[in-house]
Structure formats: C-alpha cells, structure tokens
Length: 73
Image 1 (cartoon, rainbow, N blue to C red):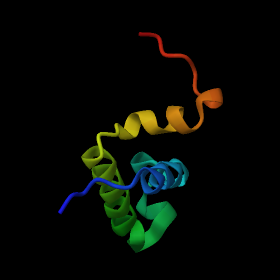
Image 2 (cartoon, rainbow, N blue to C red; image 1 turned 135 degrees about the horizontal axis):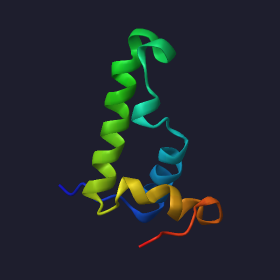
Image 3 (tube, rainbow, N blue to C red; image 1 turned 30 degrees about the vertical axis):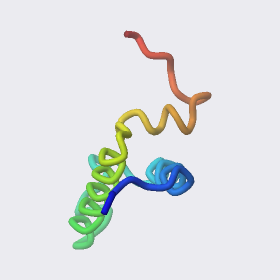
Image 4 (cartoon, helix red, strand yellow; image 1 turned 60 degrees about the vertical axis):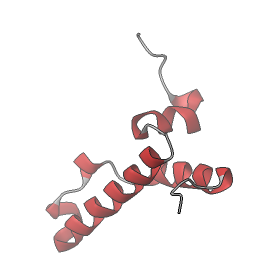
C-alpha cells in the first residue's frame, strides 16, 4: 500500500496545513489539556506531507506566493 496521495487530496492537505497553528504556537495556556493532541495532529500532517515529498516548511510559500517574501538564498 502506498502512502502517496492523489494530487487533489495532497493540494487540499497543503491548504489545510496553512490554516493549522504552528507547533510553537500550541501551548497549554491556549489549548488547555488538549494541546498534546493538537501537536500530534500537526505532526501527523507534517509526516504525510513528507511521505509525499513535500517540505512542510515550503508549503505556505507555495500556497500563498503573493504573501511570502523572496528568499535570500
């Protein structure tokens, strides 16, 4: 069984990932006892992106190029 997603499903996952909080933003103060589950969900999405040869750090710029500063390298 392959973990590769259909291109439309992968695009949907990228878009959803953009709206997820960043792991550094997930705190017990903001999310209460549920914060660990939120961190696990973020990690699950990141892993699926990586399995599909997508760098999670590059997703925002791909989905929102007009709001992403130009790279300095």
